[in-house]
Every structure is written in structure tokens, then in C-alpha cells.
Image (cartoon, rainbow, N blue to C red; front, side, top):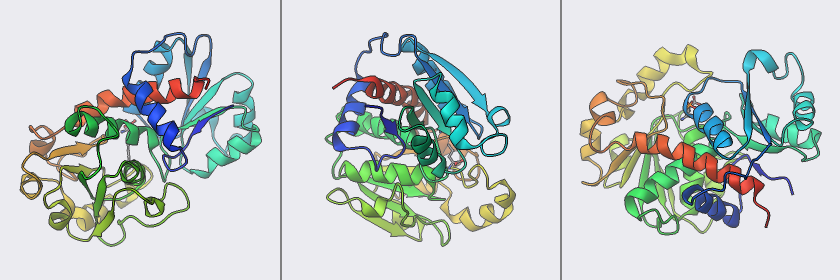
Length: 306
Ligand code: CP
Ligand code: NVA
């Protein structure tokens, strides 16, 4: 059956467990032999494009990149027709899109013939969340993703796509998640990738003060204050999020062994200072490393016959 990895919330416990396992174990390079993966990017990318194309090639497949100007999603052609076209030539389509609704439209238009991966949308970034869970497990449970319960992870800043997928992923693993953000930037319930709908896992707490959010936490996580598509709001966002900068003073409020994470790209001096990003607590390059592990896990899981 064709699979999809559009949100962490939609993945079953077994799916997540298989993805983590396949991300961490030696691979069979025949997995994607002779198969094509279409990489459609409506927004810029470094880590996601690099990790997805590298993983496809390592698994024996071939990746073809389509940028925003080439496909013109819903401008040159409808998302449905793009999906129908790609389904004739590719086994998997991985997309970075402005509007999350595109995934469901392509899935319906292709009758589920084309496996889909979300490489970031306005509401979710699930492959990043897998990489982040692998990074946290490296640090706190010797890589065992089943042993994360009880950890305290504090996300501070603009709680958007990355925060949403991270929170769903960690709450499901029993991690307690705190989100520190000013009014207008705080996590809100949503139809997809909804951390408020996770039951039976960790607790979710919201704070309007950064220092309170990170108090005693094991992990401090932040993301850009200006997500792609919000560039016209730079000045306003710098002003409204200024108290949520991850600097050395904020880090002293967390646990003495706390680590600092950021999905990157970082805007040094805005959401995080140079000394924190380049300092001993930072695990951002380990996260980048695991973007590749995560893509290997997702691609192998997609092709796995059970
Ligand atoms: N973290 C992340 O998705 O990076 P890119 O935007 O460079 O792909
Ligand atoms: N929230 C950021 C994440 C970048 C990887 C954005 O959407 O631009």
C-alpha cells in the first residue's frame, strides 16, 4: 500500500517506531533501486534538500528537483495536475509547500498512487521532528526513542510549523513540552498536527515568559522569528519577540546539563546569540546530521513491505 508522511500526528505508533528504527540501522542500498523521487520545493532549503537528495541516492534511487518557478504550483498548473503528472514517472513525491492543503489534494487526485512526504508546510515539519527526536535520544537515552518520557523540553519564540511537529512528536514519546511565546506567536489548536490533541503522553504547558518556560528544562529549542513567507514582518517580529531570544542568561535558567537546539537556518543575534549557538550546549550540527538519518528512515519505511 502506498504510504504518506505528511504529519507526525497522522503516523501510527508502529510507523514512528519503524521510522526511528530504520533511521538508526544499517541500510540496504537496493531499497529505492531504479525508482525516482520528485523533490518539489516551493520555498528555499539547504538542509532538507541536501538530506533528501543524498538519502535517495544512497538508497539506489534518483532524485529530480523541481523549484517553485518550474512547477508553478496552482499558478502554471493545479496541484492536482502536477500530482497526476508526477505519479506517472515517480514512486515518491516529497514537497515543501506554502499551503499544507496541497498534500490532501494531490493524494486524492492521484488516488493514493504517489507516496507523499512533507518537507515543510505552513503547519508542519515532520522530518525535522524525527531528526530532533533522534538528537534528543542521543543525548538523554543512548539513542533509545522509547526512553524519553519525563524529559522537559522548552520551545521559545514563534511557535509555528517546527514547534507544532516537534511538540506532537515529543508529547507522543511522553516528553513534557513547554512553549514560551508572546501573544500572537503562541501555539494554538489546529486541524492538523495538533499538539493539543495528543493524549496519554507528556504534558503540554504554555508560558508567556521565556524564563519561566525554560526553568529547569533539559532542552531549550528555538526557530526563526521570521518564517518563510513572513519577511515583510521583520521589524514588527524583532520587536515583539525580543524577550524570547535564547542568550546565555536564558540558558542559565535551564537545567545545568541542558542542551540548546535550533532547526536552522539561524538568524544570529535575533532568536539566538552567537555564543549560545556556537557554545558547548548547542546540538544544532547533530540535528543537521540527523536530518539525513531521518530521511533514510522515512524513505526506507515507505518502501518497506510488511
Ligand atoms: N531545517 C530546515 O528545514 O532547513 P532548510 O530550510 O535549510 O531545509
Ligand atoms: N519556521 C521556519 C522553519 C525553517 C526550517 C520556516 O517556516 O521558515
